[in-house]
Image (cartoon, rainbow, N blue to C red):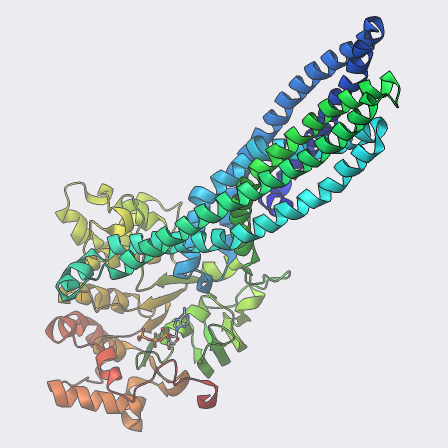
Length: 622
Ligand SMILES: Nc1ncnc2c1ncn2[C@@H]1O[C@H](COP(=O)(O)OP(=O)(O)OP(=O)(O)O)[C@@H](O)[C@H]1O
């Protein structure tokens, strides 16, 4: 628990140490103050009021100091909580930002959301509201054990033996409810994820609702959450009752021992001082039990918080991609893959099996292949979303693992299918590519990406708000803004996933036009879906089952009668198309026209090639 707190606080950890020191010394002070009751009461019962005065004065002073000390403990506890909320979220965010993109599964994303919104708040409240009474509830009885020993050693012995016994009971009951707690949190995260999915997938759900409940997944998740919540409540109540019973059992044992001692005195065998001692001991027993009851009451809260802290620990356990201590600057805008093997997880099938290719600076490369052949994975590896399992990826002649994150990011711009627009204006979203871009630069990128035509139609132009995730725009408009954002960055290498499936012909043409304009200015690596794009490439790379099976100019591949030539022939047979080996400028100029006229994606053709699935792409195939 403390380790996670220290991780969250990092440089602010000194405040946690100060808090712990204050809380422990507060517990000690409380214990010492309570024990002054013993001589004070003893002397008063013996009729020595004058002798009791210094002890009563000590009791009063101790109480005043305890009160002031407690205020100080709480103040510092609140500062720890504030530091957790302010710095902890930030540090967790920094850690998560360094994790490979593969970490962001739906489950991890939901868990992160739950931690940042709810978990962090509960954790931040712990020092001020939970740790103080718990620390005090552990330290104070320890001091009182010494006092009980001094009064009557059998009582001290029972009290001492009770402490590890109670700790054992608390741990046991904590373990019983812990599994229920873990299940509840897992189901809570799942239900939250399903809720978001439900909201986002309304169009799909409504389209299929008649067929019998697309909401089934959400209903099942909510039901699982309800059941696990009921189990958690039941088991938590049971644990709380067991804890209190255990403390009451200790109280009963001490009471019996003290009463027996008193009975002995009533029999007249012991002196009056002993009798007074027994009465004082009874009082101390009561004060010994109070803090323990408080700890028992907080055991459930602590267990719940432990679940949150463990979830934070799991996030911290995610391994960031290693950064080199001696980064090397890229020499040019080339890209090279050398015998790259890759799988998404140790037990997952191999996705790339010895892929090698070289992309010259300033050239345009079209990646094509059947669905699942590894095109997106290959591009992700160039951007170092993950590290290769074997082989190497070089950007500008330098292994991406030997470059700093900033150096690599400075070389690359990306336009992927899942381009996300932030809630803000069109200009804000374009500026994400280059935060210090001038208005002229933003406008130039907007023009280049065809955004200028969009803003002309909008009354607020560049200041138009796009909504969360760009929800107020069409798929094509979002795509163009994402292109402008990538262009304003002005990186020498542009990675493009030509997501045209959801775009209309006009937008497809705009994208094709943009690519044509950029040709020769940057190194373009395009997962090509349009035959027009493929045709304007300097080089085509055909992937099949994670391997580069063909590589060359469009003319060379047509002539080689391989996979590329096959699907070209299929397309031509189906549509009567002809991809002319026209000069590049002519192709570029006709790109928009081609896309408008035919718009048959390469991916479609590629799916007609021998089917490739992740399951088929296993070790044996590599
Ligand atoms: N995050 C991931 N975790 C595990 N496996 C993945 C992940 N992303 C992709 N895969 C698997 O890797 C294989 C290659 O996927 P990839 O997306 O690279 O193919 P692709 O050629 O781009 O396909 P498409 O044209 O359909 O987009 C597929 O079998 C896919 O299931």
